[in-house]
Amino acid sequence: MTPIIWVGEKPPVKPGAKYYNPPGQAWGLNEVLLMKELLTKLVQAESTPQKGELGVAEVISAELSRSGIDSRIDTWDQTRANIIAQVQSGGHKGALLFACHLDVVGPGEAKWEKPPFGAAQSDGKIYGRGSADMKGGITAAVTAIRQIIDSGTKLQGDIVFVGAGGEETDSCGAKRFINESSRLPDFIGVVIPEPTDFAIVTAHRGMLWLEVSTKGKAAHGSTPQLGVNAITSMRSVLDELEDYKIPAEPHKLLGECSMSVNTITGGEALNVVPDKCSIGIDIRTLPEQNHQDIITDLEKIFAKLKSENPRFDAEVSVVRQVQPLETDCGCDFVKDFCSAVEINETTAVGFTTDGPHFALLGAPVVIFGPGKPHLCHKPNEYIEISDMEKAVELYKNIILKFLS
Ligand SMILES: [Zn+2]
Image (cartoon, rainbow, N blue to C red; front, side, top):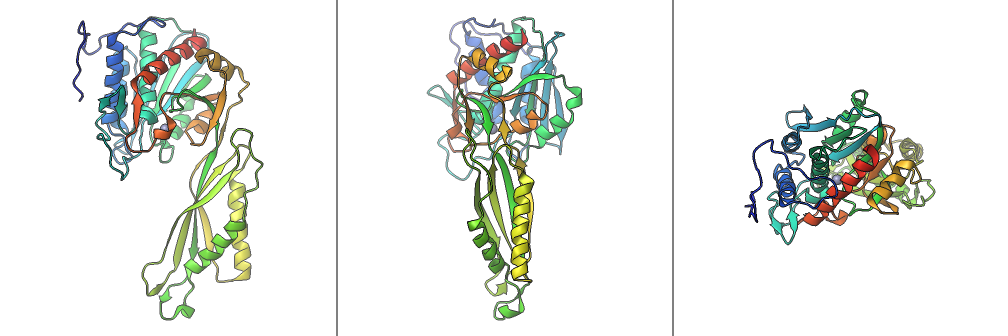
């Protein structure tokens, strides 16, 4: 825990104490301290795939309850969690959804200059895994919601906050949330506070991760003629993939569809003909593209190879897939969003998000948040404290634009 140095009057620290900060007014020292403290707790809660999201969900729940906002933590597999909070307005407008992910990737092998889960503060930055991706965004969204509620502003539509588990692995939290959508109000739009460095992102490519396995027949390495070498079969697949181009027209914002073979495993010992070899293929897809068509193309390649060599045997399976995201930049929600944050341009990014899952709610999705995207998943990840303050102000503007 970082020691807090008080300047001036000591702020109230009683649990449940309220902190009043009407929109548009200058920030008090209290608000900045509370915001830094929240991010510190979130980073220290270490929500890697191994540890799960429950600790982070509990931190957010406690923070929201300071302003009297109830939340529900949905747990599974002991440590996995989503958190959902709905601030009911009683108003006639649709709801605004802030959709975050609670999990972070591991610290990685490279050495960090600051401890990855220490939330060290220096030079106006807070360091730690997840500080940018996306606990800084969570902190800003939760702080903005709290400040709006504490100010007593009457809203005409509900604010819903969801923190979903598993975005970095399989989007399981977002899928659970969407499956329960019958409990939810109609949404005007969805804001995803991922680190875009305040770019308004309306599109990203989809992701299709495939595993292709070839099957052979094991034999002693000294008598290869008695076996079928799965690595040799995989070589035929790789040769075919070299010539295969996924049929897709380049997209005006997203560019080309891409495909890259990024893993290969096969063989058990130097004196055994391998009976299995597999590769992992990372395909990034464009809107309008059907993932199943790509899988069908690969199956056609396998069928051709089998017709040339009856001993050839291969299959393809989906490891993970995320659909592309494309929100209509000309829709009212995006136009109003741009005016609320006074930025006229929308853009696309290379990374994927849970956005396509939330788009299933039928509302436009915009990705917009504090933090530099290039710091994500790297050692020495950090967020600028001033960027979080700016995000709080902009999220408050967004809430007021759509819900007042
Ligand atoms: Zn993220």
